[in-house]
Amino acid sequence: MTARSPSASPRFTSRRVVRSLAFVSVALAALVASASSVVVSHSEAQQAPTALQVAARVQHFYDQVPVVRMRFFQTYYVKLHNRYERSSGTVTFKKPGKMFWRYDAPNLKILVSDGTHIQLFEPGSAGEPGQVVETAVADSELPQALSFLTGQGRLEEQYAFRLVDPRTQGFDVPGGQVLELRPRRTNPNYERLLLYVTNGSMVVRVLVIAHDGNRNRFDFSHVEVARVNAPDSDFVWHPPAGTRRVTTAN
Image (tube, rainbow, N blue to C red):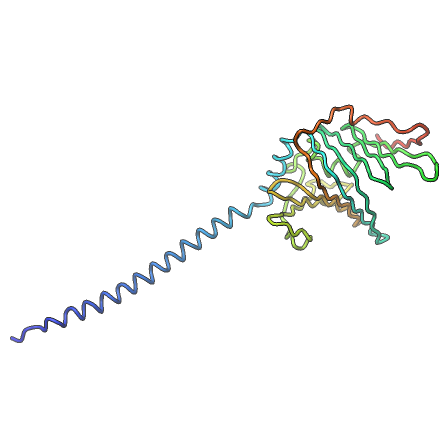
């Protein structure tokens, strides 16, 4: 009987081993790619919070801050006349419900709220007396839209949320997010709000969009949330002598 060639088995075994190793390599590559995909997806999920999570972070941040003081730049768009009105100044918010807006020249307006009523003072021109309009907080757009800053509103209770692409809003800020808020109940003062958020929780811009298409935008800067002293007396204001009074409060 002819003996089996001793070299045949090693060659055959070598080919089988090579094919097996190749299969194992392909399988491992597929597993690594699959695992990498899972890791990336998990990482993306961590980096992309939901609208509800962003709203909760904003609410939590401002819940911890009793007083906020900052500068503002206001841009008001009147759709009917296609006109923009711009102004600036400083504003202080204090819980619960207090705020004081002081406008720079040439406006020199004052808007102050004690949490229940609002006074809006507009100085007269050419030596004429100014005018102050008094209204209830519940009947005014601004305190309702900014109630998360004054401790009188709960975002998750008042609004439905969705995230908007920051690029479409011209908000080119690393990690910036734009949160759209629509009132759960019809609000006569505005249709929806946009909050422009940085650092996961700080609002640096608010856009109030009214039912008639008017848009009231506030850009905030020089924000102070620590070591701010604002006694309640800072939110008590009396108009100059001779000022005309108009009361619209219920």
